[in-house]
Amino acid sequence: MTPTVRNLRLTRDAVLPDAQAHAAEAAFAQALAKADAPTKTDQKPTDAKADEDKLLKLRPEFAAAGGDVGGYNAFWLDPGGHLMRVNGQYRTSLLTTPDGQIPKRKDGGGAGAFRRNGLGSFDNPENRSLGERCIIGFGRNAGPPMLPNGFYNNNYEIIQTPRYVAIDVEMVHDVRVIRLDSQHRTDGIRPWMGDSIGHYEGDTLVVETTNIPQAQNFFGSWKNLKVTEWFTRVSPTRIDYRFQVEDPDTWDKPWGGEYDFAPLTGIVYEYACHEGNYALPGMLAGARHAEAAAKAKTGAE
Image 1 (cartoon, rainbow, N blue to C red):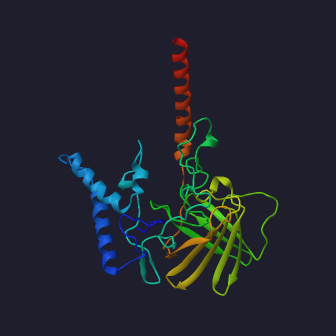
Image 2 (tube, rainbow, N blue to C red):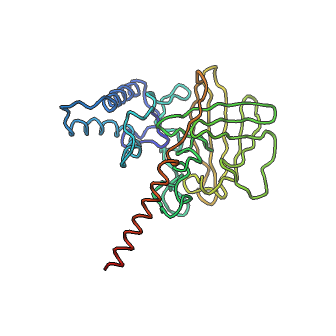
């Protein structure tokens, strides 16, 4: 339930008291259950809208999932039902900035987007978003930094060898390879998920990533972006994950966030992404049809 960026309409505090956190979890569970329930034949549209508004107040990003034609409703979402606890505290955002927000850019612009939103040109497939084309999962599950998308399939499998750490990302079946005790590449190539170099400081795996491709920019930063991550086993059932991003051309100082991983029982199955496979030809064909219709109309006039 804990969003990456703090929902300031609900609270400005970084930590929620236990009682307030439990109340928020209960309210979310009730709103989600109503949104997930089969529509009754005598249900009024205003009743459904009221239930949806309660859900969106707690999780406004759900509007993006179901807002367009063909969008997802609550049936398709598996968002979890608990707020994130870190060091025994209920957090209101994964970001640990003072206000839980993305810092302002040095150029005075807004925070910017960390991905193409898929609303660009339909001229060719490469103008569409990476997630829409099933190249990289939407959101930042693969990272770096690794952030849950808030909807579903936020699982990882971490494999360790003497020379590498590999992270299998369920969304969207990416494998991120971290080279241990090595050097960053200098050939100018920017692989998907960047160039990650790791080393151990005691029980903590420290990973530094550079050479991130422009298409995977993080809130507008990519060319000189450096992401540092810390993975620390804090108990048999938790791994503390911290990250810091820095780009002297974009922000005045480094900033970051923190949350915990919990072990998954079972295996991570392949996430078979078909949305772009089926939808992309239809969208491009629709754009060509619209262009032809506009051209024919102009010629007739």
